Length: 388
Image 1 (tube, rainbow, N blue to C red):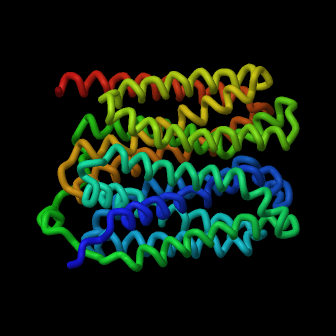
Image 2 (cartoon, rainbow, N blue to C red; image 1 turned 45 degrees about the vertical axis):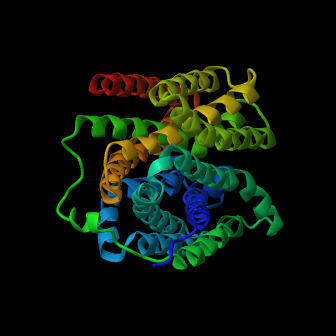
Image 3 (cartoon, one colour; image 1 turned 180 degrees about the horizontal axis):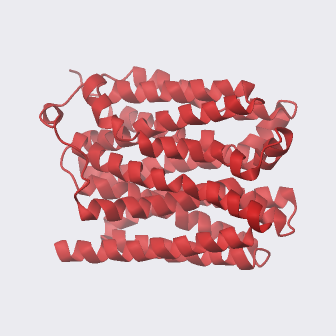
């Protein structure tokens, strides 16, 4: 078989990563408007963000089985096709059932794609995993930031039709499908020998990694869902609130690329995890209790902290297993547990906002979760030193 150019493999990986986030983050600038127009409560409309995250958790264990059945490359292409289809259905999202159905389809596709892409990295880039994960997480950060920043202008471009602003994100997914269908599909012999293996549920370290991922993902999706509303409630204009949220999303771009590179260059993976957790805790405390004090600074820093913690957490399973399919199993457990718990965060944030009448209390609770995330990062580093 003719070798595949590594540049093409990397481009395919980044393009797939870009399509994993916009379907979720594109709701943030429109969520209050959608809730008002469809007469939905905040706790219910938050399901549009929470349902994909729940599916991403519950269905992640299917990924290794689908890789064995169809191969990594074809399974990933099918996932991107489902993303495109789900986003196209948002043309009819004025019906709440259609909006929620598209959210479930998105979560299903992303659930399977995540572990498979980790296995893809292990197969083709085993000698450069941190650097390639940097490109991978950069792609997700670009997609997440694009969904948050460009959806409002796209909506305005389409005559203020928010359903068209949401559906336009099907376009990059279609390009992703076409590129992945061009890649040759193969199944490694090492994977065929691992068909009976299961997820590492009995590994304490796998649980620590999963809990860290759950906390950082929950904080990201809660902020992506309610960050604009928190700033607006504090007295900032809607335009400025959207700008602050855009700053946070955009700051995930440099951190998601630079921090994995620094982790490999200086062997400081767990120290950087700890620093990201502490930075996120500080920023959330300011957004909770003093949202109008230097808001640009805290928006910038929390984007850097959450983007970095996400990118670094993606690297962790790659160093716990030896083969692409084994990495997919560790990643599947991380995503299953992580997203299964993280999906509750935006729902509970919206529910507590409805009950308390203010975003201060739910954001204070998010600050406590960030402190717990920092503690788990410290435990991961401590256990790693003991194993070493």
